[in-house]
Image 1 (cartoon, one colour):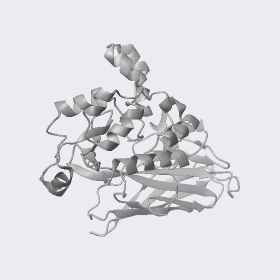
Image 2 (cartoon, rainbow, N blue to C red; image 1 turned 120 degrees about the horizontal axis):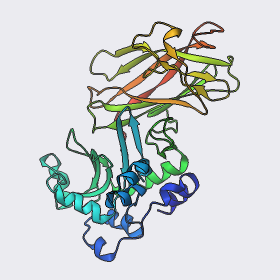
Image 3 (cartoon, rainbow, N blue to C red; image 1 turned 60 degrees about the vertical axis):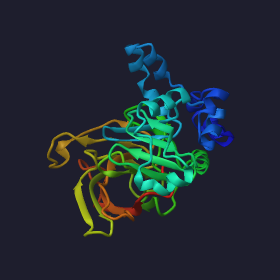
Image 4 (cartoon, rainbow, N blue to C red; image 1 turned 90 degrees about the vertical axis):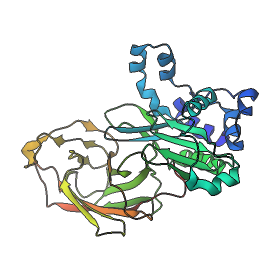
Length: 359
């Protein structure tokens, strides 16, 4: 806790301010998980601004504070309209959820060995998404599991303590960075679960003609697509072009179970950003359904920092997962006023697979 609080104090004090006081001895006594007792003995969950207005049935207050869901202690991500924000509820609420869905928070026959080791099939809630689509829960032996609406319980970490310490480390060193969880259109910030610390496996980095691309993915069993990915772009100060516009993408997605999938298309999720040397971009967008040249693009807003977007890669046919790689075509200057020949920017391979620890 000390490590995580220190990191939040420096990087995201708004999340630290949501942490509640310790749970009472009586509340802790009902827990079977030793790790969960330790966590709630320091802070009994979070209280978000949204909570108070929901309890008061104040609809105006709910609307004004709905972005506070992005302050979940255990991070989140958004892809199109699919939004996940993992918060830590006070025990009174988490125990209530587990009680009302008693059959859901039990391990099944597939986990017979784990049940024998723990001495019980009972699970206790660690974290819940605001949409109630994604859950983390722990058994009596402190093994952590993740559950999704589309499947059963899967092991997320061998122990809750190891998972909690690793989360603190990731927030501290920036692997889980602070960012606009809902995209550049929203000011709401929170902990981003797309890893951004390059390891050559689950997060890759490549620089081509001064354009840096950082790519990573998140396992999302609560969604039919199973994996979502994030790409971030930045044009360095020493780039050979003053600006360049993204035109086309070409992906190679493989999982070893069948022929690799080739995905080719114009822009990325309907966007054709113009990157500026030294950072920043203009978020030009597709103005018509069919792309037919510069005339079909609507000039967007000028923004600072990285251009980033998220999308789904699709499920993997192999239990070992797969890989995602490709390249993106840019035009120096812009499509409307090119200043040179088009050039390809590489997206270095990164894995689409379940990591040893799931967040």
